[in-house]
Image (cartoon, rainbow, N blue to C red; front, side, top):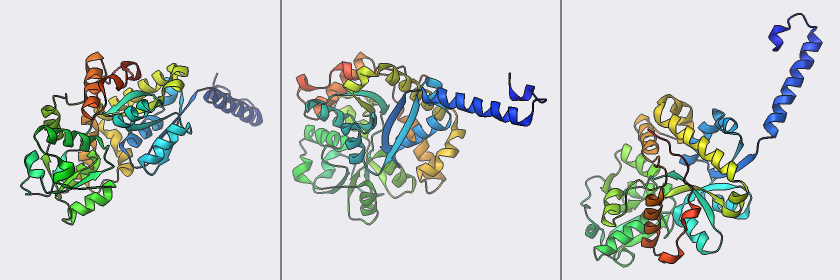
Length: 328
């Protein structure tokens, strides 16, 4: 029976019933398990999780999402390592490094996007040998996934970029500005910063990451970014991890199939114009990974070996979450 069906009740009684109903709703919400996630304030995962929360996909899946925004990747990694949060979005290579250090994490695929190797418009850089002697900016540090793959592909062609190029590591915004000013010849950066530069006509793709993966015999579309949860915590919260995976898959489906949702996300994306906005939207959609199976997990493990991990030390298949995919 709703309050609308009781128009004759005294006003005070109706208000009392309303308060009771609110209290009951709060009580039900309080019973839901809370999942605390740390993500970058201006990172792409924030878009996905904002949509998930805004549309109540967490409550529909039986949990309450608590997003903790941070300014940089190290802060997010520290938060999940220390237990201040339950999970975070990290590179596969970071999860592997923690596994090697004795602190294993469960890995739920988030995105397969990799930033292409960029150069100023018209630059004569079309092959790996063209990188010799060039000033190369790399977003992040030496363990940046795109940089590791680029150096491995170059090594296969007899090019040692660590010695034969001038390499500068730094924050993505600063490196983007350095490329604009002509202080860099080549830029290896995160995909959404690459999308901004190419959409504005300030850079062009010199070496597509797909071609580098092909040279290394690695399939494209592998989820090199993922949500991670400490393995011990995940074992104690298997149902919660599964519910989160379901909610994330639903969010990805809606963002892929219903473009109207992106209007509410645009303020988070910091898109300077429509071209940049559309490039970011399409980049996110293109990065939605396929579900993991045994073959794709083996490909991820092979990728880790290429980064220098000993074959018997790679993350085991049990750490990769084989959740249902987004579907078509």
